[in-house]
Structure formats: C-alpha cells, structure tokens
Image 1 (cartoon, rainbow, N blue to C red):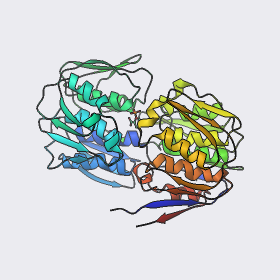
Image 2: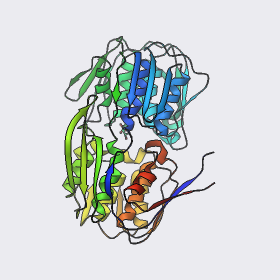
Image 3: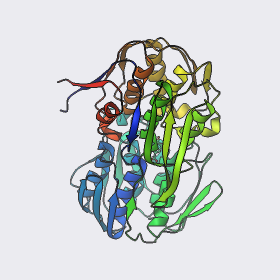
Image 4: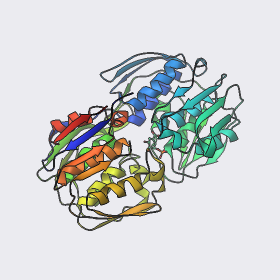
Length: 439
Ligand code: S3P
C-alpha cells in the first residue's frame, strides 16, 4: 500500500521564475494507445510519467506491446498493428483514470479476445453507460456492474459496424472511445458533439496517417485502415499549468513564465475565463509542436473580478474548474458557473467537494445542481479534505498563497496521477509547501 500524503502550506509568498510542467495527460494517453496499435516504432518525448498514463502503458504491455521507458519523458513503443494485441492474463487495472478506461473500452471491443477493465475506488463509481450503450449499438458485447459502473467485461470476437451517434454529453472521452472502436468497425463511424471538446484523438489519428473527416460538429472515421508509427512531442499540460496561472494571479507581486504549454483551441477555456476575470496573462512565442499549438505564458499578479462564466467555455475548461474556483474566491464580486453538471462525475464530485472546502476556508460558496456561486472574499487557513482528487488537492495548495493562515490539504497521493513532482516544483517557484508522508 502506498503512503498517505498531506500538504502543509504556509500562507502568503509569491510565485516567480520559469517552470515547465509535465506533459499533457490526454495527449500522453493517446500517444501510448496509437503507438501500440501502429505499425512500426513510435518515439515519444515529453510524455507525462503520471500514474494514469502508466496505467495505460501497463495495459498495453499486458496486451503484448513492447515499450522501452518511460525515462525522462522518453518512451519508445514498438507497435503491434491494429490486430496484433494478445489476450491479457488478468483484468486490466486502469487505476484512477477515466480516460484510460473509456478509451481502452473502444479499443478492446474490436479485439478477438475477452477482456476486463477495473479501476480504483473513485473510478469504480464513475459512469460507463455513456460508452457501453453506444458501443453496444455498434455490435459490441460489454457488461458493466450495477448502475453502469466499472468493471467492464468485454466479449471479444464481435463484428462491429459503424453508427452515426449524437452524443448527449460533451465528452471527448466518449467521442474518442467511439472513434477508436470505429477503426475496427465496418463502414463509417460518426460522432456529433453538442459542443466542441478536446480533439487530440482526431489530430493524432491524422498524425498516424489515418483519415478523419470533420464537418462542423461531426467527426467520422472509416474502419479497416492502418496506423503508421510516428514521432510525438508532447507539450506541457495546460491543465497542470493552470495551478500556476491561478497561483500567480492571486499572489501579490508574482511574475512567472510557464514554458511550452499546449494551447489547443479546445483546451484554452481556462485562459479565456481568467482573461475575462481580468488576469494578466501574456502568450509569448506561439509555435507548433507535433501537430499541437504551444506557447510560453507569462502571468503576473493582478486584482481579479468575479464573472458569469460563459457556458460555451465549460467543456474547454472542464478540468480547470477546481483551480478557477480558487481564483473566484480571491476575486472581487460574484462568480457564477452554470452548465457544468459534468463536474459532479469527475474524480470526485468537484462541485460539492470544492464548495465544502471553500466554505471551510471562510468563503461564501453555494452549490447549484449544475454549478456554483462564489462570492469573492478573504481566504482563511484551515484543513481541507481533497477526497483523493488530484486537482482539488493542487487547487487548495495554491489557495494558501492568498490565505490568512496555513492550509493543510489531506489525501494528496493522487496528485501523482497527473502531476508527479507538483509540490517540489511549486516550492521551487515560491509556494511554501511541505509534504508530509504518513503510513
Ligand atoms: C479527457 C477528457 C475530459 C477530461 C479528462 C480527460 C480526455 O473528460 O475531463 O480529464 O483525455 O479525453 P470528458 O471528455 O469525459 O469530459
């Protein structure tokens, strides 16, 4: 059993210097998946060596793909081709990762063998019908536990056919799952999304030489093609950079540069929202890396103001709300979020857990069914339970920069799923954080 981890963060301080946060989690997962399914050798640099991505890599090793690394973000994957995976000896453990489980389901329904996907306590509570229903409509046989939860038991050897799917929730995981299943299906598989979601799967499929058609909100693939290995340079994760964007905005006299951050247009809701709140963000030297736009971001402290968050930004900032709520707590006036029910089915119920934590730190935060209303104020010190949610843990660690007393954040072990080395990196640029490891 790994040890419990708490953060003890002293109040005040500022963030200064330059940081490159670890690689993008979404792109890292996909690079392992497509690399393993491609023909030839894929070389990845900048890979996130977080536990979530290691779960995906572990699954492909169990399915017979060979890989060297990861070592300092470098991974070499020897692809087995779309039909070269072998039956695993046991259930595939996706740990804490919803992305790994949902995308792997799309791949595994196309195999000749049976498989099972399991996850940790948090993942075991997350909804999987959103993928098992449309996969079933494609001809897959996929059984969930009660209430559509994991584990997923997938029967191999089924003939899949393409479907034209109107996705009820704006979910890149569902879209990606179906496109991956579509590689194995007869005919065309199309997914129409109700609002734009991250498009890393589409971009990377094209990078591996697979034709993907995008017409407005509808994206389609034809089954029966091949993936050709390629090299991938993973940009720094804008979701991980977010903690520093918020921290530097709320801590007086901060001035920090985040390097090589991915700014795919489907991921920059946090930048748009912070700018609406008055944040001082400068995008420097925009360029391209491996089919994805990247930039350096300079952030300086400023007085933020509360806003009504535009609903069209919600899917583009879906992972960034815990940190944005801290920004709202430090802003002048009221911030209102609506249209964000999806936050309730992430690694934790992020609306409930954030509202509870903010109230505990003296902030007026009121939950609504699909959002939250936060009155900006003065954060106090206190003890926060992150409920094992990595993004909640990192958000409250940053809150200490603007708090009047120390903030203790409990249950931070899962920070390693997306941001190994967070506390050390944050301390390096000015956060007064100490890591306490328990039994
Ligand atoms: C992800 C999509 C998002 C996001 C998750 C990663 C992905 O989930 O919250 O952290 O890599 O496709 P949904 O698409 O379910 O909203």
